[in-house]
Amino acid sequence: MSSPSSAPAPRRGNKNAITIDWRLLWHRLLARTGQLFTSLRHKAGRTEYIPPAWMQRFRISWFRLGLMGLAAFIFTQKQVDFTLSVGKEGLAIGASEGRHSALNTGDKSAATATMGILPVSNHPSAATGPATSAWNVNDLDAAQVRAYVNRFEKVAQGEEQKFSIPAPAAMALAILNSKAGQSTAAKRDNNHFGTITSDRYYENAWMNWRAHSEIVDKRFPELADNSVNYQQWVAALAKTNYSSDRQLSSKLMDIVERFNLDRL
Image 1 (tube, rainbow, N blue to C red):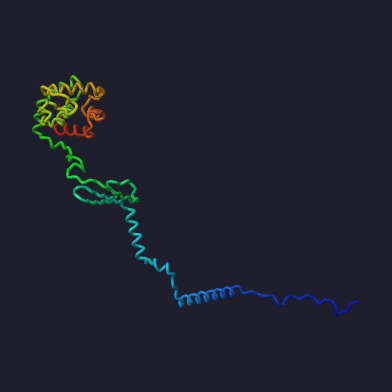
Image 2 (cartoon, rainbow, N blue to C red; image 1 turned 90 degrees about the horizontal axis):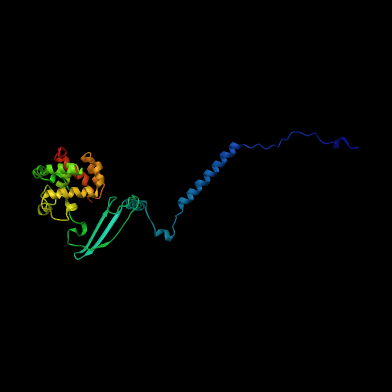
């Protein structure tokens, strides 16, 4: 039998339980971290940093770097065109730049540089072509035009009746091509309609008018369907190969309006 003294002692609550104060631990951790950073900063301030030799060769200040970036931006935003000309007159160098230069490709962000060797010539039309002045209806002498209209008014009306060519349009064509009868071809060959009737000499101006009507009627028969009014006829004429002048219709309309040919 076991003695009463050997019986197990009754269990009691644990008096050695550990309690953690998380707030205090957090504050101590922050304090230690602050001390560590302060120590490292103090050591870094007392330590002299010597960069490697290769870095010392490429010292670029922020100011220089900014200038380089600005130069790169300006260069990429403009197009540059260089021309180098060598000829009898010596060396001629020209440069043009801008988005509107002769070699502009439409890409604003692209920079293009070209260089060419061109001969220099004393002839004025060698580089720029023959000098031509823009046509203006006011360059026609009003008195000469009035005299021309009075002279050929009946002829234009007769051609309209026979060939369905509106008299205002035919008169404007004759005035434009013959300079109201003052051109060399009109005075020398009685040719009042330019290259379309320039194949021969005409005994008189009326024969030239008739030849012009016959050529138009034969080569452009579709114009007869547009003879209701002169505006429609002129617009249809501009769509044919009657003339290589792309401004033909506007010139004819200017002449009709300037000298009131719509009354014919």
